[in-house]
Image 1 (spheres, each protein chain N blue to C red):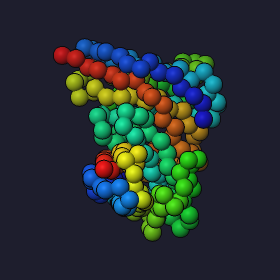
Image 2: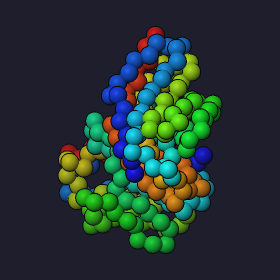
Image 3: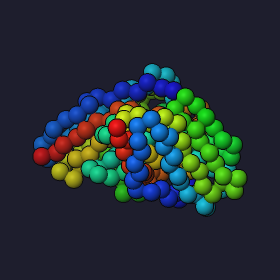
Length: 111
Length: 113
């Protein structure tokens, strides 16, 4: 699976949009971009995933660049409960391939 | 999505003993996974467990230390054997749905004294 690079930490004010970047310059054509988050000591929570088109669900939006070498997870109105470590992971589509977790980005949402 | 439970949620154990962690999911799934998260670290995959076959272990993890059972499509156990303080971690199970998305259980917090 391709390697990802994320900033170690970010800050965001409550109510503002949180934009979390991820670089995956070696991504292959059959690899999806997945985002998970882990709130302190809980199990990771699936957020969203995409192949090449932008995706949106009730939690977040995923913007993937046209060359697919980077992406941004957007939390449109961050709350204190969004404080967590956010992991960007690339994995092969289908085939039940494993997830490889990096260090992620620690997002701190402040009042 | 899937509802996944783990037992116990936490435990404190003495070195040299073993602990079996249970993972139950509310639907039938083909693939289940076991991860370890050491203090302050990210998640590391221990093994993949398919129903009806032997678990597949990642480099650095062996069956004698982490035996896994997968008796049916909704249940799996991970045993941490002959524990030492270095085994103090959060142990997490996850399930794969439709070959596309993994969902995680709440984790088992283990402290070995």
